[in-house]
Length: 330
Image (cartoon, rainbow, N blue to C red):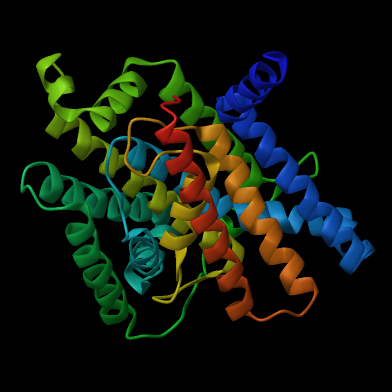
């Protein structure tokens, strides 16, 4: 009589474990692929389309990996899309591109990274030392960064004239796009940083219980500021990647990027309340959303329908998190 309850308990424990959550994400991704094949046939299953999915996933993926650290540390950032737009615009101004032409296209990359890091640092200082709520501070940055991008560009598209940047980041290595390689390296580095370093353990501690982390000797405010700085750097890198993909900098880049990044992190298994994060889950979350968008696009479904589906997935993921957390699972 006790075998069935014990078996059910073991299955429940497996599904709520990190391995079980990742298995669920793999199954969800495979189901999406099956739907894609059934509805779009060879248009979905072709190698070119697979590479298209990975290229699209790379930009949001880089930001999502960094967002995993911020959310794991108990924060959130609504400004990532606007910061990416600002970095892309600043890196493609006439003066910046002229400097790149005189020296090297690395000037544009450095500019984008510095702009992203600067915006992230401001967010971190306001939240950690200014005691502002992450929602309010990053909401203000979202408005300010988008507005500044519009002022700098005069709401015009700025074409990338430095072909060296596009040639480098738009190239392929053994048939794999450089953008996809950057995403893979970022994910691998993020996994190591979160799971195999003191910095990662401190991030989990700060997100789980800031007061206990402080009593344990962790400088909670400095650590939180660094998390936002890292996310800003990721936005700068993503800006460079989108410049290579679109060959243009514009204030409209990164629209709803914050939604996609946060959604990927949440459905990947990172707790919105902080204290638990998974880079592997985030990667699967990015692939799931990108594949979903691709399937909808191939079937000529509009953006409104896509957003409704994304919203439903986010709600389901949060409800599942609450249920798991209520059972006291890690």
